[in-house]
Length: 180
Image 1 (tube, rainbow, N blue to C red):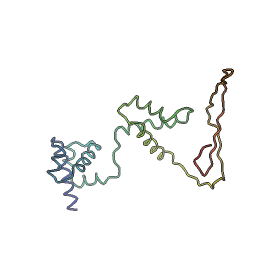
Image 2: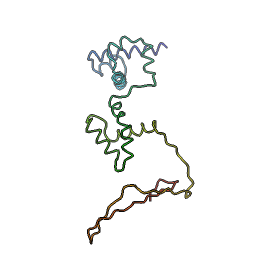
Image 3: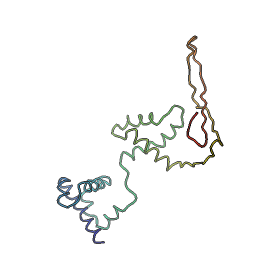
Image 4: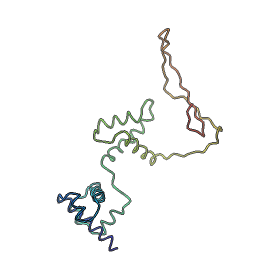
């Protein structure tokens, strides 16, 4: 218990010194804590958007509970992005709509927002929570799943110039992820 209180006292000192404008390097030297640890604590407080006054008013026990809390606040950018997810989910059911197109729509509205890879990651995490997937185990060669792609392709006859629509047929073996 005494060690935790000493640690929390140092945590309070980190933020006090940081809010007074002391550099992270000097805080590290003064408190004998690595600079990376100092950065992690400062980022933690920034994430919670706590002021120096709020931190100094907290008891050591409250501060300790804050660090042990499983419920970390979401970054503001993520909160903004998650507001779009139900709309994206609905749009992705339409033919021709891709995650990249939706990301471009989001990114034009929020140029300081997430890049494409992070956008895809957070959308995947959201879909895991909203609509969990049930995985089935299939014996090799036992089942074949077939469907048409929905959107027709067009080809041009090079002799007549006539445009013809084609259906695209897709099939997948249940035990593999190979499309044919």
